[in-house]
Length: 184
Image 1 (cartoon, rainbow, N blue to C red):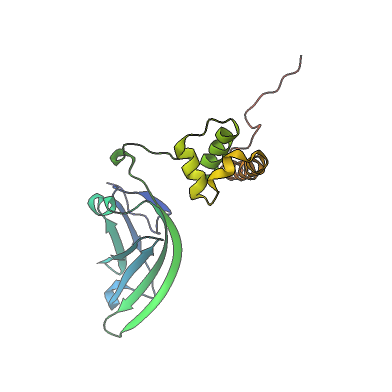
Image 2: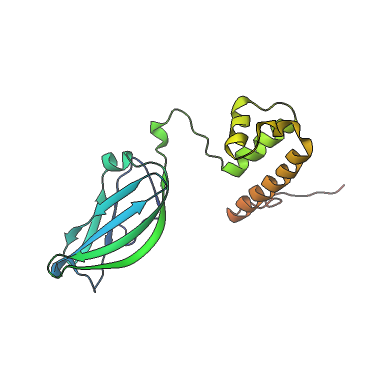
């Protein structure tokens, strides 16, 4: 059996079980404090409540419960309430990402928006953009006629290429790393 973490997760996958325990000497469960979380995204608000584990607060989410969580980024707030004193205190805030349950999906494009846009722009420049690629560009605020404006497409390609390079650098995937250059 896995030991529960002692801090909130940075991410977890929808459909997985997850647990963590919070110990807070200022808000012990034995003194009537109850820990709760509010998680909120652009589309969903979730409420979680802990159970007492001695003076600590245990949070446990079942696979069935998390299966209903929409994938995406959530802001969270940790609050403590005490029914005996009517006190409520915000103790911490943060962000977490709910990753998609890949086994429940039929298809999945895990590329970032910038990578998908760069591919769509390059396809448009080569006159081979699919309807889905044109829809992606349109959903990103570009006019459908952009596919005929080569100068704008080239400018956008440079913009998205730079964004993709920043993403790759942040992920540790710097161009040129791992390559061996030889001269004859």
